[in-house]
Amino acid sequence: MFSWLNKRKHVVAWCYRYVLSFSSSCAEPTKSLAHTCWFRVPEQQMKEYEVLARGSGFIVRGKQSNMLWALVSAHVAAPFLFRNYFPQDWLTFVHEKHCKHSLYWEVDGQHRQIEAGNVIWKHDMLDIAAFGLEKQRIANEGDWESLHSRAVELEPLSDWVGKPVIIQSWQIEGTVGSGQEKIVASCLKGNIRVQQGIRYFIETENRNAVQHGMCGGPILLPENKTTCVGILEGLVPDSNQLDSTIRNDEWREFFRSIAGYAAFIEASVLRDFIDQLEKQQSEEPFRNL
Image (cartoon, rainbow, N blue to C red; front, side, top):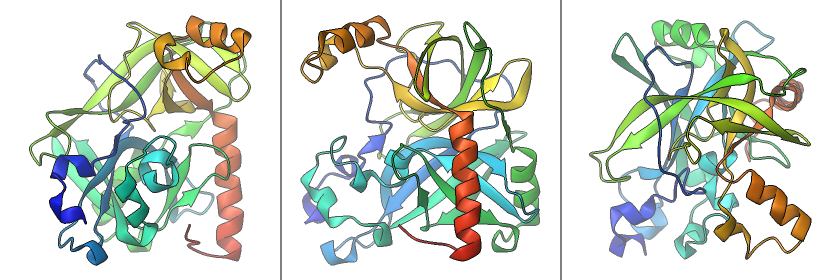
């Protein structure tokens, strides 16, 4: 029964997947959105929606002029599918039908927010998910225009060694789930140092710099902040956390060398994902999980 749980215990993921410590506020307009997953389980006597998970995201334009895609972290959009990250027993009661999602951003200090519904598209293998935002389903035309103007262009990496990047996202101030917390825009500067398959790793100005809520934010180029080279997956844990889970000495040493780096999934993967979604949508519109 949820009724005996303290409200804060409901919140399983403000990027709870990582142990985090430091961040930097954003002094300029950010392309990122704050993503909140809400849940209500009537079968467990929940009467109101409460926060289940929080993260970040960003907008990519679709091939059709009336479609935008919001890319987010799958472990924030559907934490009940990531039980290896979130072992809370009560999550077995939560399913997609119990959830809804909202996207938040700011324009000239003014708050904007839309409901993204409960239909998400999840990557088959990676920690990526998306919401399809159709123009006719967004009631306020100003919100559509604002989101459209915030869209980034996905650009696969080529010459990446040492490349400077900016992580734009949102973080929390206050206690998660208290109802009093604030979400604030955040920017981190760093350089790409390591590649491992489709993942790249950023050494930020301060290691362990990724904060709660930043997962899902765009990785942008400083010379052109509309060019996105990837989506933030999270923070590489420190060696104490890894020693018990990685038995191969070579892999353990590799992860020790990048502990505290920010990991991201590269833009070519995101581009392929969007292409796949648009093909599926044309065949089966608004497919659910």
